[in-house]
Image (cartoon, rainbow, N blue to C red):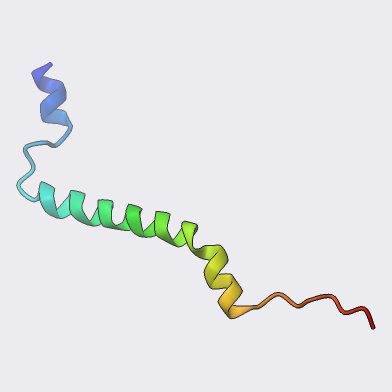
Amino acid sequence: MLNTLLHTGSEHPDLLWIVLPSLLSFVAGLSAGAFSDRVRGWLRPRREASND
């Protein structure tokens, strides 16, 4: 069991600087996916079909 804990890198001296950017990039990816339709609507508004 102890070998597994040591192998995970939980004692790494810079673990905070590895986990924090990973977590921030994950949250940024989720927010980009959540707002992608809204941003696409700002850049390319949908054109209404005309009855001409």
